Image 1: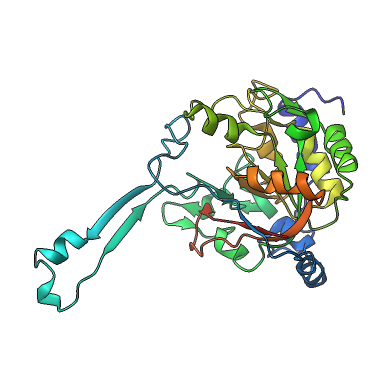
Image 2 (image 1 turned 45 degrees about the horizontal axis):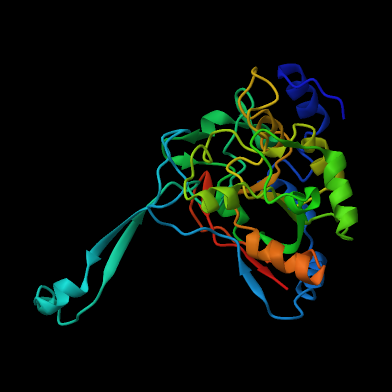
Length: 317
């Protein structure tokens, strides 16, 4: 597609691709409506070898956040009770010796889902809800808890890095709709309605290989081009998941808006989005057996009114 990305293109795409009212005025799960019970039953049949691939990254101080966006920080893990406490007698009053801890984290600091109330278009969020319904108490609408039993179905991997014959895409390299389709054909896999589509750029693997996250979380990155919002709507996928911080290419294709693709896919389309996915081991296995479809499960934590949720999604083959 030949799109001059800017505020006008965002407005046009938001109107053309809007799913407001498509599944009723009370809908709060967006494109997850594409996933049917029959889809889940058929997806379960894809488990043949019993191989399981964890797609989440560790929740620890070595995560990718450096404060480039929104002051996000890496998980802070602190002990409340330890073995040292136990052997020095500090717990004997309670007549039990134990270890206990706590975790303080940003819900979008590691592998996560974005909730549909995460991004606004002007003063509205998905399905026409007023942005004022999202305040300091949390999301009164469109919180991540509404997706608690919906994040399961057929997963598909589009390994763009391997398709290009490179270990990883360079920062700033965009992925077109045409390339997504060509990659699917080369892998002999069909994109179907309700699929959880995973796109591998290899950016995370580059950071892990170099031993430094750099600008991964908020800086330049490979990713899908703005036109991808039309592809997602045409394919009627359930969700898009990627191994990058924000799915779309950075620097963005316009200076008129930050994350222009986000402006359309979340508030207009209600597209479910997964970010910071670890895809290397799954990609290697898909290359080995030539099978790029799998059973996918990635339920969010039930965070009432949450703008997202950390997850450790699973791909099963």
